[in-house]
Length: 73
Image 1 (cartoon, rainbow, N blue to C red):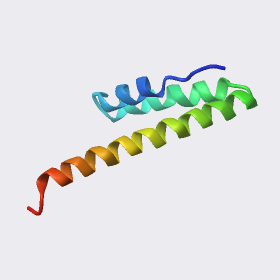
Image 2 (image 1 turned 30 degrees about the horizontal axis):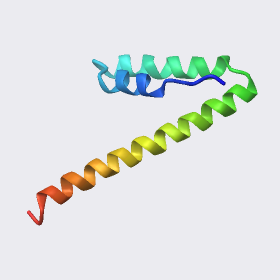
Image 3 (image 1 turned 60 degrees about the vertical axis):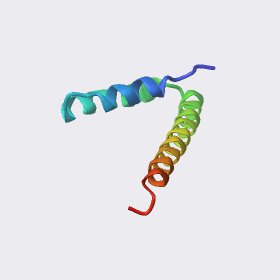
């Protein structure tokens, strides 16, 4: 089973110089997805959903810790 490195794409996108570079990174992912077989696309989607859920959980946790640190200000 192939492991897809979504974190690499995510960090590259965050650090992109502009929208054009971000769009090029997104296109890389789309091209990769298009090159996969049906079964591989299913696995890609499963891994992507897992990555996104973890990232959203991490962001929520970070937000809650910052929000909690601010008190009632």
